Image (tube, rainbow, N blue to C red; front, side, top):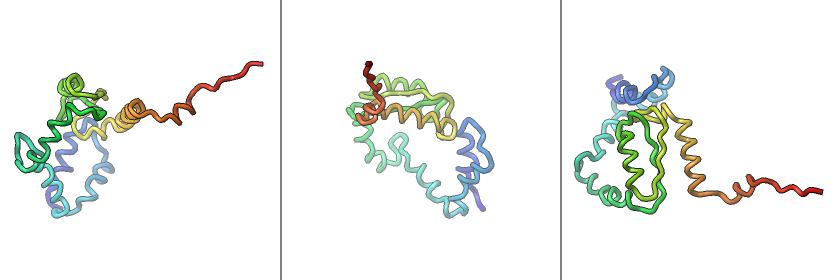
Length: 149
């Protein structure tokens, strides 16, 4: 079958809990051959670190500069130990960026959906509901006034 380092090594080392054989098989399924894994080899090499690859870094620089000061509502979910955004960095972002909420959700490394899936979903639902309340839902949830006779 050839090397499948991303699924066999990177994925398990980037999750707190241990994946079952069935879960690992689900990750393996889209990549049955060496050739089918080419995108998994290429896309991580396109993530810009320290300005490289230069073409990608140049394309995203305006967004990187805009995001911290934009008025667009933002939510950062963070985990411990956290692979790319450790807890201290996330808390710094919450303190210094414009219009951002942060929520610590517990244990997680990189593929946090495998460790905290339900908590992530609940946090997004709560945040979204607070940011963009639905008047119809609020009206339906309002206490019913009773008339006393």
